[in-house]
Picture 1 (cartoon, helix red, strand yellow):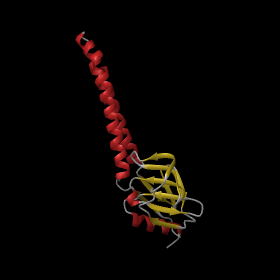
Picture 2: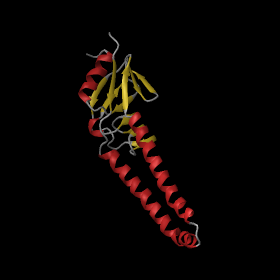
Picture 3: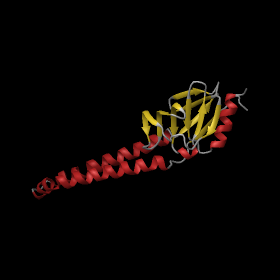
Picture 4: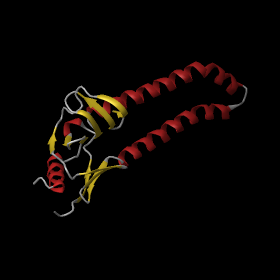
Length: 180
């Protein structure tokens, strides 16, 4: 059996990932607006006393923090939004799962239905970590869109990923595991 080496881009972020991001950003900006509004009387007093630099620091600090956090968050998510099969081993960031012994690889858009997070990220930017559901049991998820989800089953573990092209990924994973 030949070694399979292929990189798979993750599916574009789906509803289950985008909505928590939008809600989180909206809550952050709302909190920023409330804090600015609550402290505005004190800041305007300092400006009236000729301390305009404090006004600049007052606005620039939080805005700069939000911009840096957003850029680093999106950069980190973009870098980890790829996974690969490298010498017949599924590599998802630092996690490595040998494909030897793979029992099945199937599409499952409902992989997260009824799933409870044990640890990890449940939807802000990506769905990544350990989950449990009645249907799948304990499983590891590395998803950006549940509509493109592929479930890989071994005798003792389950992994869910969301490649941009699920059919090609399933073909490659089966070939790397020697199922085709």
